[in-house]
Length: 401
Ligand code: HCA
Ligand code: CU
Image (cartoon, rainbow, N blue to C red; front, side):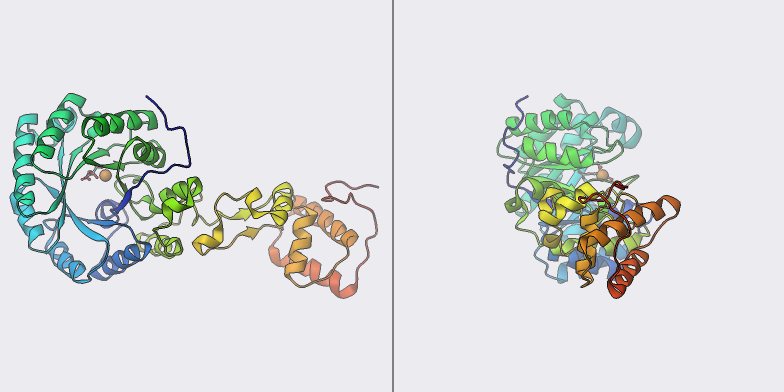
């Protein structure tokens, strides 16, 4: 396995957002027609290339909603997620969509417990539908559900057959989230080498916490299409999150995400979080409530000189702001000085050192608030407060007397 040597090289790729399909399978989700319209419009504003939708055969309303979504005329391509069944495909065709995602489970465990079909039967059904759609010049992807627990020889045969039938793209989902980044790199690399002209779509569940790392590994191994959902919502604990993937690629090469409207991501994350009734997790990139909070004196001191010292993402590129936490015992004098300047106050350095020390001491006793610290600073400025003792000058971490 030859690993990529230049981390700043990000190959061309497209994002397939499946919030309106995989995300509909999330425990808290129930999207109304208006929710779907708004989510699709917001995804379109971000600029994702594809928006995947639940099968129109899922429910009568789903079918009606598809027609409404098609009529929006979005730039993002709408794609239904379909079983290899002619009736489902015909229903999807009648909505006016031009891209089709087909899937069939190829792993022995799902063959046994899900559909009971042999690999030959899968090949026969899949190629029939692929040829049918390609006969109408549609864009078609076929994915082998549970690819990472499938036999590679079976996948070789299935993909060879669907590509022969004209499929544009093959799909490799890590359905149960068990794959590791190295395994993904090797498996995607295998198919990229075997079918160099085929597009490869990758979809990864997060059961073992590797979804984002696996999506990155897939991209570097030759995947051309990466599945995500807003906040990563999906079956169980979900899949790779849209904002996380963008943040991952942004830090490697900002040009790699220049095609997206980064400032459109936070409103989308917040909208979907509220719709499905979850808080954005603290581990979420960019939109986590603490993603740009800085605390320790050593950090905040360096940040006043260069924001890049402790920030790999520039919050302003995403339309969000940083916060310097000051009401705690780890605070440094530079952060307190910066806060007093932000408040338009002029306080002598020695006084700031004493206030810093007081905040540390009080914070040992109780939880302080920003308002309390602001009050101390305002009072010091108003009274022209002078320090009563001496403190070390660089962060007042120690009392000198
Ligand atoms: C599902 C399974 C799926 C499909 C992904 C794909 C998965 O239909 O719920 O179409 O490539 O994780 O395997 O989401
Ligand atoms: Cu999935």
